[in-house]
Image 1: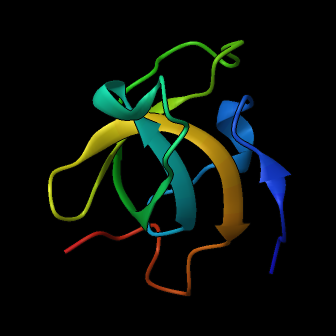
Image 2: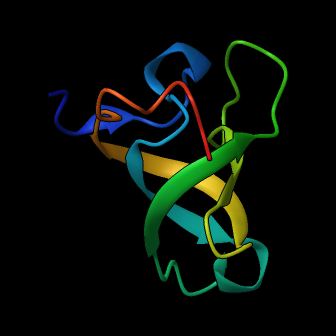
Length: 78
């Protein structure tokens, strides 16, 4: 299990992993939203402000921190 990885590298983010993101409307306050990655939206290998993802539940934001890796089914989203 990976703990506290940066959200700036796409390689450290997988479908099904738990992350903290900052949504567009929360950029000024820095309020974080925790969730499970459903889809990785940023195509480049790195991004200075964090990789953009869609969480299960539909929220979209840039990853601030990767909190945990996906389980065994993480690479096979439902």
